[in-house]
Figure (spheres, rainbow, N blue to C red):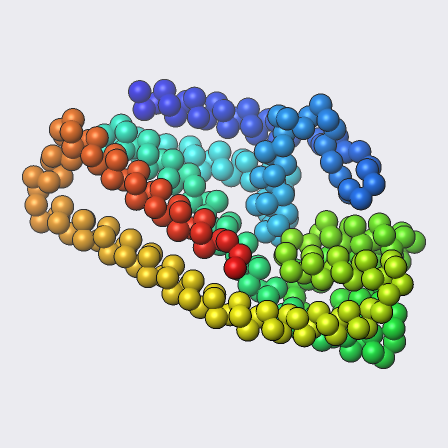
Length: 296
């Protein structure tokens, strides 16, 4: 039974890996840099979302691009299947632990996404201050964004600005260049800034006044956000500590009472209970991780 499930899962992942190798059909559409051809949308939409979130947004295209993410995941699944095959556990628990371990790379990548967002948050005020200072000296938005790119130390902000400035130097219109900038930006508030700047620039509004207002707004918002982040982080850490404490307590009790592990692993009722407990703990841990990814 165990190997039947493993073979089916591996066969599915092989098909996914082959599907990922097919080159994307891309059509130029106004206000959209790249979209899939309509006939490929349904079967490949989730592959596109997976690639965009865990390869592009994590800035790991050099290591995980060109289908490497799927290949590494396939290898991880094979290693886990081999390891759990030799572990003396009921078939249900082995499959459950295998599935939970399969989610570990996604959890790590989600933590990296959170780290990138926090890294951008820390440098947004410096970004706004520099852009505002450049605009006060010379009310040329294009030149100001070029100066911000040169002086900005945040690699994630600089990447989007580099796309924008390269497009402008190549003779691309401001509207298309801003579209490219937004496509290369994944931080919500940074996208909000770019959208406001784009609208004011295209309508020839007062960009200097806009940047000054955005700087003041960001300062006020950050004061409140920092308070909420501290509270949420404290609650999350307390929840994770409680989770680890329960696991360690359970392991301690099992270690000192052999009949407990015998009941949970060898009896039919015990196997059902152990499967239910592990599944409940896995779901609870997943809820904590998903909740920690919500932006306040």
